Amino acid sequence: MSTKYTVSAAAHIDAPPDRVYGIIADYHTGHPSILPKPFKNFVVEQGGVGAGTIIRFEVHAYGTVTKFRATVTEPEPGRVLVETNVEPDGSRTTFTVAPRANGGSDVSFVTEAESRDGIAGAIERWMSTRFMKKLYTEELQLLAQRATRANSTS
Image (cartoon, rainbow, N blue to C red; front, side, top):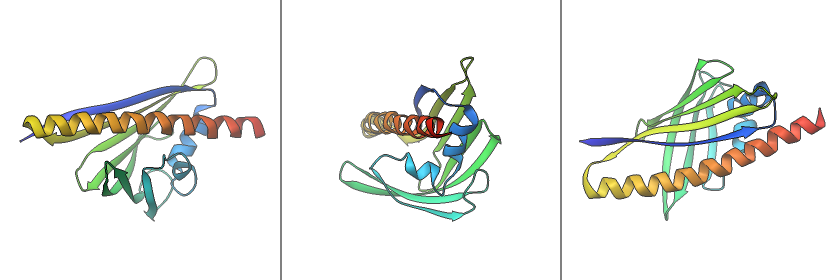
């Protein structure tokens, strides 16, 4: 048995949605540039921009290293991008970029995952949620810096 849980973070970014989405969807340079330090050894296996991309990376947390391999889909190109981990666990992270009335963007990261049941699973969910929220907050800050920096040079 397992228990499903969700971790999310959101931010308002003062940059056009197409620029923000373009950074997230570009797995060669854009996306790696916004990943916090716990992400290591990021490799594009196939594709590299949006749907059809296959990536692998490691996350260093709590003294352990977890290796991931994920496929990328775009249910709504230019607005919604989804990374589904095929190794190790089937969790999925949805990146959504929506326009704001002021010309900026509303951005959200939502991960849906599963953990064990019982006390061990509750501890796993608590630690994972705490860790991922911190990562997503930092990643959104890095995204905002990159997107607004591009804004000032164009």
